[in-house]
Length: 140
Image 1 (cartoon, rainbow, N blue to C red):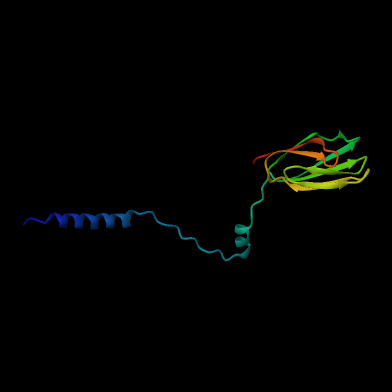
Image 2: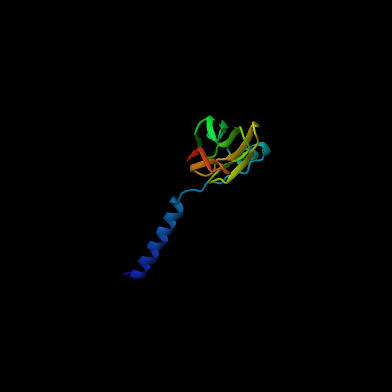
């Protein structure tokens, strides 16, 4: 007895489908955790060891930087604090981040920001347009 070629095709497809189900990779089923502390631990954001607070102190006299680094280098994600003391009232401005603080004569003032933009950003005395230096933010 001779079998029709279509029967061979159907039989081959059935065999291939059966082999697929037998040898397909098993999916792992995750069991929900019942321990609330364990659930909180898995959903809490992991701390970034590279992220930290970096503080820099600067002293300005006669519209010139006389103390503190001219270039501040930090990493992306760092919290940055720039403490500025000036011998005259001015506005300390960080370009790129568009952050500024008003400086009072001989009063330390803090400019705080998170370094979430990478690149080089000039800081200046805004009213007198005097560049004092720059912040360089390195990517992670």
